[in-house]
Image (tube, rainbow over all chains, first blue to last red; front, top):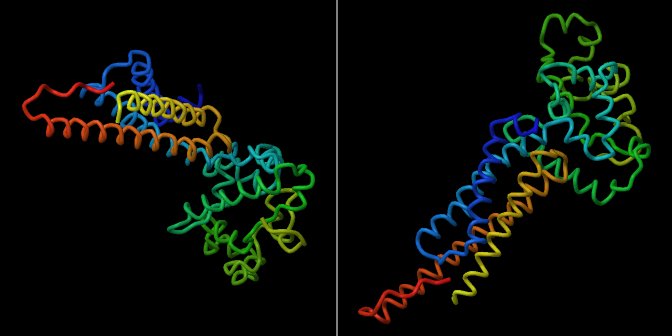
Length: 215
Length: 82
């Protein structure tokens, strides 16, 4: 019920679905002849209301895919999610999750591609994750997945960090390590979230340089 | 298209749409990977196919009425299908 009231789109979707269901069930029960009025009613029940439900449902679905609950619903991501949910954790993921700007969408905010086609590329990448989950990780124990799941493009992660941490603020540049690694950080050669800098984003995460498949 | 076939097509379309709506609503209450994926793939396919089936039935019915009128311009109105 909370999910239903969380967004006006949910209300629109349910309303459209209920109206459509009423029309369709009425048709199935009453079995009226196919006169013009029946066609109009069926157009509403099979066309207008379902399209309304699909549109609002799709927007709602796309929004749901940004939530941590969604990302953590595959068992191999359970530890990542648990760490992000843990308010006492000092990991980068958890600290950003506690930030209101990230909140429940901290997985998406940090891992999404940016730029004009960022959302589309991120969704395409998500489909790739689903495919890998179905074909390789479905029966993988969580402990094993911790060792094998890695960032596919670790060099691009800095771009996402720099969406907020521009690397140009005076305070940021006052840090000697930041000044020394400025060019490499901006080029993605040195990861912000790496051992020696701000630490790995997730406490059990495998550094990109170690052996294993990149996912 | 016979009235019986029209009726059958429409019943299938209604059932498919009800299933699609159920899938689309399911994702609201359980926004995890499978409900969302199924709603945005199978749900959309079922809904679109149902609408296409309805369009086909309406078109076929319209064509049958028109043919009937052309064959019997002074006769009575053709009997409504289903």
